[in-house]
View 1 (cartoon, helix red, strand yellow):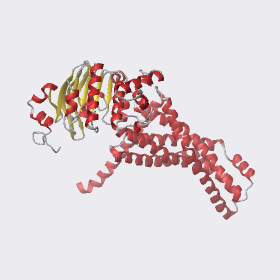
View 2 (view 1 turned 180 degrees about the horizontal axis):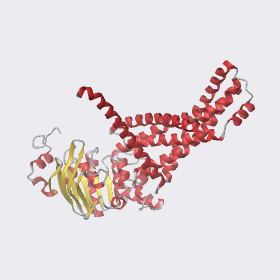
View 3 (view 1 turned 90 degrees about the horizontal axis):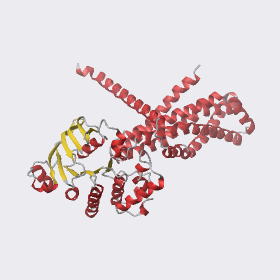
View 4 (view 1 turned 30 degrees about the horizontal axis):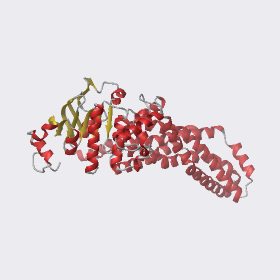
Length: 261
Length: 248
């Protein structure tokens, strides 16, 4: 009897563990967002987070976007040539970059660069008792460490997505104009004429959601890190995995919500 | 006065504290001794509210610490952490003046810096250390910075968690003397946890020994050598033979 029921027990335990994790992350996110809205506000930490998440991520975002835009243009040109549709390259590059690749790639780059950095920094602070020190110095770690990073990500990642979209389109424009014989000004005119405001709005909204996910996962795993170097390593790895998966899942849900017919 | 009444704390199946009763009088220096893993740090964190106890009460001047205003309660404390716990991202002077740069005790920046440099001088560091980052300092210097941070806001109560761990004997002696001097001149209530007997003799007015999750013995430091308690005798002699198991 017990052997026959064991698999049910494993499934039950796995489900309960997963639900418990979802609950803990949800409570953490709600707590973080409530601290974003309530004083005291730490302006210096917020400015530092803006620079760290936004300004210092520009090179990696820009390079990712320009190469992706270029490759996308080449693929669409080559694929379109099979049925004489090479002319649609500007429109498809614009749509692909703005609606999907821009926000997702920027989100994943932020997960790789920023989530890992936040998780490692906060986890190290935890194992070296710096979080306890903050508390004894009458400073709430959720307000001092988490709220500035989450708010900065919510604001600056959409801006990064906007920059990534533009640079990605530029990548496609440069490749098609430089090597495929497209007229540069016609390419840009087609891009601008084809894109709709809604495309851009959804792109920026996705950036906001992905930025929030990336910062929250870094903070959550950092604050809940285990002991020692191994604990910091696990927190960092876990944060990037969770952020990447949640960003991709959120992208699917948001795309469904925005563009389902 | 800090009073602990039947304070217990369990982590999973590990019963760390099993009903600790202890009183620390105002203006005295109490040192808690005990072997590694006996719950000394947990006891200290329970008082500060960093780790809530499972049962029992902790009062400060008669008020239950769980029911007082948290910020006002913590404003009365300073703490020196075992590893210093200095903030890596801030220069030394901002570590020392952390409490003076934000929150209810906020001062103008230049004033906070002056206080920080004065406190650094008090612990034997020169003003040219103020703009360095913690990673640029030696272990002994980091301990001094931690001490300067603990006293920067002139707290009434100061906790020292293993203040000499990781230091050479001479630097440990310097830190012990500094703690004694500062506690005496500030008139602060001090609670130190350590297993370094030279610290105990330098810092303590009274001593309590934590063993098996309870206070095994408590009394003035002068009576430590004649306590008559075999656990205390074994601990202060550092003998492997006795009622305390050498392998725990």
